Length: 178
Ligand code: HEM
Image (tube, rainbow, N blue to C red; front, side, top):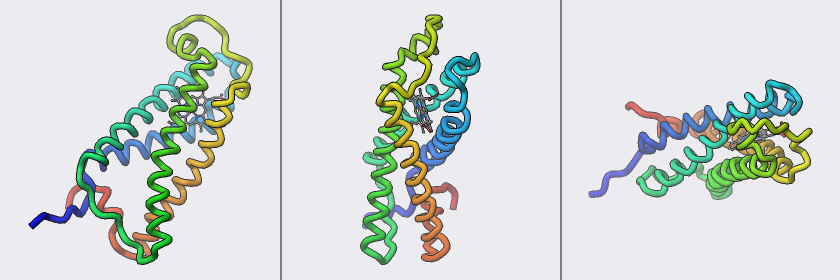
């Protein structure tokens, strides 16, 4: 008889928590630090370098996560007892993948339009544009950041609902050990 899988594979668990930490870092630093430093400041290049490396890593790790998710068996979706909530959970998980990929893509498009790879990593000596707001992908990057914060909030609320109201121990599926 085929054994029922009750938790996510360890690779997915590690990627889940690593990505959660990196995303919080990129969202927090992007909003409260990077955006606040004027492009004329000497600190800007270092902040952009850090943000671009983290953002790039997030895009790559998310792709790896998607491949692991598609190729390894995981537990069946946790039921809530309500059809609409089950659908909302599925849509939120799909939305998280879509928004993170869109975030990485719009960040890279902004960087390419502004010639950042040469300025930030190549030491070309060229100056940064006065503002990135003149680039359409930069505006999209800002809107998606807000949507992503809302969706991460909804995701956490969903876990709290399972854990505290349904008391189905959902969180243990995304951990290791017993
Ligand atoms: C994938 C995860 C990423 C997250 C979560 C993220 C997050 C953010 C946030 C929150 C902001 C400020 C947006 C605002 O409030 O208007 C921002 C700005 C920015 N990000 Fe990202 N980012 C990511 C990836 C990238 C990548 C891969 C690049 C480039 C290779 C990039 C380049 C930029 C640039 C150039 C800015 C503008 C900074 C400014 O206006 O001074 N981001 N990012």
